[in-house]
Length: 262
Image 1 (cartoon, rainbow, N blue to C red):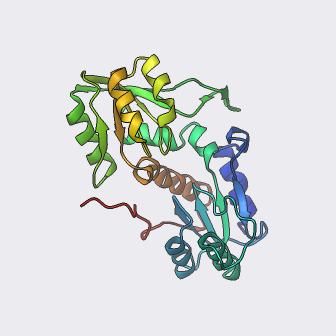
Image 2 (tube, one colour):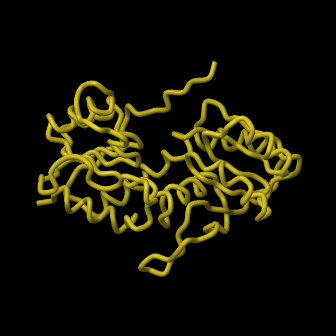
Image 3 (cartoon, rainbow, N blue to C red):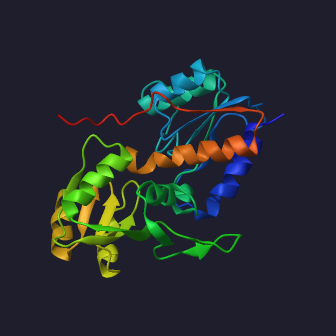
């Protein structure tokens, strides 16, 4: 019998919790550790449609990147987050997540993003430590790409990540070295520039950062939070299927980016 605890402990081997930021919420945040699991749903977020999909598929576990609770002071039906948690609890669905620990981990969010973009000679930018296997871990990844102009690179990112659109600032020079940080990593733009990268792919970029990037000579591409992090879900599904071949593992079919472009 496979339990929630079994899968939770396995996820910790992929993304050890000591890699998470101190402010983060990771792990088993909802449900019983000893519950038997026959079916798992994997998605980037524990949004309502995803929770309902888990119930429809008769899943006992919802495995996500983003946590199912953040700043709740009460679990009730007065907030959307509270209603989602109540839905999971009332339907016997446990929720496990790996957030910033999966961002930092080898083969995690940012390695998946770098590989999706076809980067070569991928490296950890500014490692903060090594894991039990001696592999460096840290937030950003860097690598090389075939030389191209900024507009062509932005179009390439849009295609590879399946974005409806991207925002970008033209760094004014050809691109060969690329840094990536899935989700909200634009605060590290100055460090990326200092290290000599020609382009930086991330998300949730504020207005001034685009102008800063242009001045720093870095092509800054905002490809969307969902699109830059979602590739890790397929990785999680592959690993969980291999580790627990007797259970069914589903990738969410309903969760897409709610941000649209006219």
